[in-house]
Amino acid sequence: MLAPDAISNQEPTGYVGRFAPSPSGPLHTGSLVCALASFLDARHNRGVWLVRMEDIDPPREQPDADKLILDCLTAHGLEWDKTVLFQSQQTEAYKTALAQLSEKALSYRCNCTRARLKSLKGRYDRHCIDHPPSKDEPAAVKLNLPKVLATLKHHSTTQLNTFIDGILGQQYEKLQQSDDFVIHRKDGLFAYQLAVVVDDIAQNISHVVRGADLLSTTIKQQLLFFLFGAKPPAYSHIPLITDTNGNKLSKQNHAPAVNTGTPEKNLIKACRLLYLSNDHSDYSNLHQSSVNDILTWATQQWNIKQLAKQSAAVQSTFTEDEP
Ligand code: GLU
Ligand code: ZN
Image 1 (cartoon, rainbow, N blue to C red):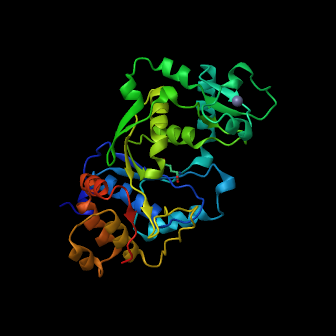
Image 2: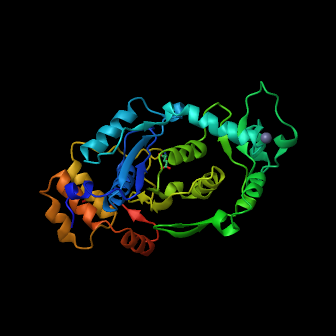
Image 3: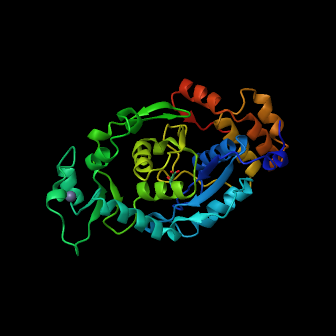
């Protein structure tokens, strides 16, 4: 097996991965597991690993969460390559992307209220295409899906509507029946779907390893890649971690912040949750190890195929078992 030094001296492999947290709070066990999975996949494949702070939704952000997240990654030895990209610094790129789509008439403004959209109880009736809001009225910008699909006629329906997830296997969404989705919000904020793709393209991301809570966003993101003439990354989604009551561990559910004072213990727990070994003695042997030794072991053990097999066996019900 290669030691970390030998790994960094190898030729670049073209693999570029990233962890892209939103600073809505400190990392909890679930997000630490996702960060570790993305890091290990990059390091195991001798790739570059980036961190991008997705800080373009101030109402959902917590002051200092960006610093807490970066300090937490550092405490766990999850050291990123290059400087952290802050989405709040990228607004020109998002504006350019929005302008391109608007110039090609692939987007339109919609000022329907939430109540109106809800009252439709099903698909959006695309009212605002024929009744565009006036220029000075606040409005969301939506992608005109039928037009986009017509533009991408040279792609097969299978290519557009499916992808093979590295862990969860083939995924499908019939875009022809999906609602037009928001790329610029009515409150003036850039939509996650647009920003994430613009940045993944700008950063040459080749592999995305992230939580399964984002699985349902992926086919639409892949579509934006095709639309911008870029190759979509390979996606792998980590089954969500639940607490012992089956609740998803998330900031919304008030999952507790990771204790940065016990990085070794947290890493060992995260390694267990990622099924890095079936041999329990491997984990007990790690109890005296340093953060770097744990990461070196974990990088060697990382096996996304094994994770896929194990997660299929437990049908995505990762349960956090206390050590
Ligand atoms: N910022 C997103 C989140 O924290 C993740 C984006 C991504 O990995 O694509 O949920
Ligand atoms: Zn509308």
